Amino acid sequence: MSSGADAASSAAAGELLVVIGPPAVGKMTVGRAIAAASDFRLFHNHHVIEPLAEVFGFDHPSFEKLKEAWRREVVEEAAASGMRLVVTFVWPVDLPEDADYVRRLVAPYAARGLRVSFLELHARFETRLVRNVGEDRIAAKPSKADLAWSDAHVRDVEERHRMNTDPDRPSPADAVIAEHRHLRLDNTDLSPGQVAARTLEWLAG
Image (cartoon, rainbow, N blue to C red; front, side, top):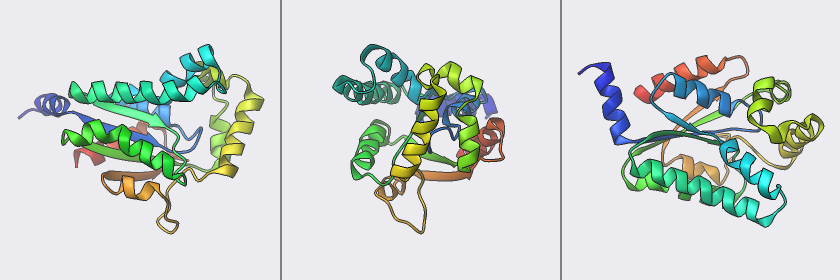
């Protein structure tokens, strides 16, 4: 069977790749690189955040309600259509309620027996602060255009929550991730293309 037929067969089967990691680690950029090099479609976090923030603002109760509902419905429809989908978002791994949410989010794929994989990115904090002000990031995420606010947000999240798993520090996220495939990559010194290549090779293995 040809590689093209393999790709078509995999697409028909459906697959979910969840890209997680702290703010400004490069989730969206890596997701774009994966989609460009494969038949995965990308649904990144700010596809949801930007229009809802524009209408409601971050502090409106409807913002969180609709963000979760919209993301869930997109995943449900993608699973039903057998799509290979990349989803990206920030996951505070220390929060039990977020672990429950992620389990529900991936359930449409898991319930159909379709593969769910987690790509977890981590990078040095200083590297993330630099990436946080990158032109491409700001262009795709207008809510980050206030650079002082965005910088303070990255620092605040870093102080308040754990954004990566650690084998030596159990978290509520561990049980959810353990149900699926999991690749943890330090992308401090890797380009998005390099991360995409490693990820796709891992998924094909």
